[in-house]
Image (cartoon, rainbow, N blue to C red):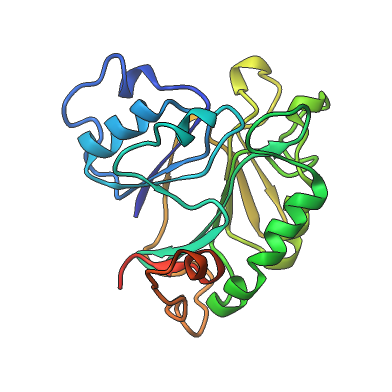
Length: 229
């Protein structure tokens, strides 16, 4: 499965200077936040790949005009082509604004997903807006990462954590990729291409199929759902 991961800045090659066919071959698009809703709508329309997203701290306008044809997976665990994907948008609270959370609030969000994670046998890809603390973040209050995300990695060992929030062009000393334990952490600022197998990377016994699909919103948040059922 070929994944286009995006965050923070609209790519000129995919937006201002788009050429037909440039999105061919992508099976899935993952947005880690802080992108124009019209940009996501454009990508999902021109590329014909499913687009899953989480909110960045500058995505308050989505409440009025969300991206069309895209699926928000904030606080959900979904399965796509056998790959388990967990969404946790937002950043560490540094002032009063949308999609900002204290450490305690982020821990609560993760705790509410514990049953879905156990039911699925774990998670393969975590998409966030902010990075884990000490793993690609910065020391200024607006760009510090979450300790709770680091604890999530320690507990569930996802193969990948994709994030944005920390613009790489602002600080060229920051790494695009790093490895922490079993997890490859990637700052997808603007865009990053990732190719992975279609089957669960950890190959759990249930193959990720015990996450049930449901039409009830309250259960969607608690259980997650499988796009392939």
